[in-house]
Image (cartoon, rainbow, N blue to C red; front, top):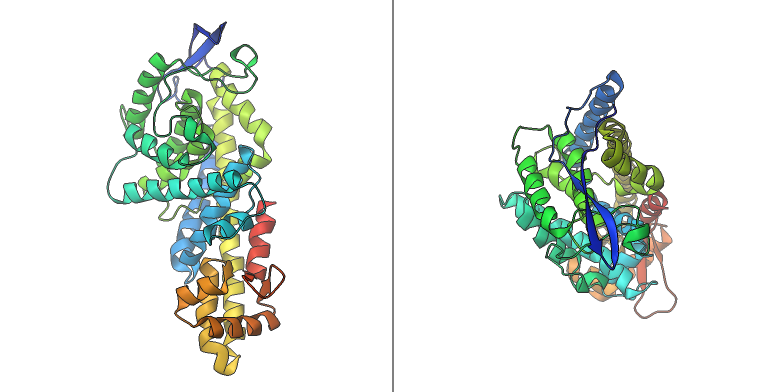
Length: 385
């Protein structure tokens, strides 16, 4: 459906140039969304897939253990969209105080994404609403001690920014100026709180994501925070009990089309094309999430059965296996601290697990040895690449 421009432009002067900045209209869209049979079917499929993902996250015995790596996988992919080079292995090494294979700044940015999501979920669990204050708090965590620490962490921008290009004059998009931005943010907050009307959670997440990206309220980190908002909205509204929806891989694979759709909403008001893409992304990603939990569950169960046949080593191996399900890259020292086993027992048991093909040593030598849960990491890395 073609609509009038979904906002208005203001001619502003910034960095010595006069450019047109876009100020979006408040949500929900006007005229209302036109729900074609195709769009309705896509949203029904997305909601069904989300329901299955939510059920899998709570019904499968080992599913809660997969949350650790799922969140980190999403952090890696979301940060990759912004140009970082960190892999999942790099992040897991960093978290056990080992040296990653990429610049430390890249890994720190990914680690901050994990911390920001954890922080947002904690605040929502405590009953604090998704709000402008929470946006700022999450942003402060996201940019802490990373490359963006000079971009006013935790504070809305007070100067003009732009998206793409080397300057405002050749930018692909110029967001609203600071004085208009605050009013836009206030309207977005009202929309999140179902003012002027209640909006179904999945639709709310889809619309709010575009609106946040259009407002671009921070000097840095807007893309990552905009993607974070999606699972936070679904969590706050009770659609997901665990933040297992990881849309960044889908957005990364369709990056150019994703940007075209965002711009299409602003210029032509084509919300329906964006919503169809969003619903397809949710359905595909949630379905893949259920499949991943199933694959990882089978590996865990098969390995647990193999470990049970290790005789006297089985109890120690079982404790180490449980720890590996939470952190699939470890050192013997970390395992000793986690399981309460002595380092000598851990090393002896790791040797048995390595011989059984369950773990593999990642580095050479006998000191500071690193071990990976082989098949588990292979599946996670395959889904990221």
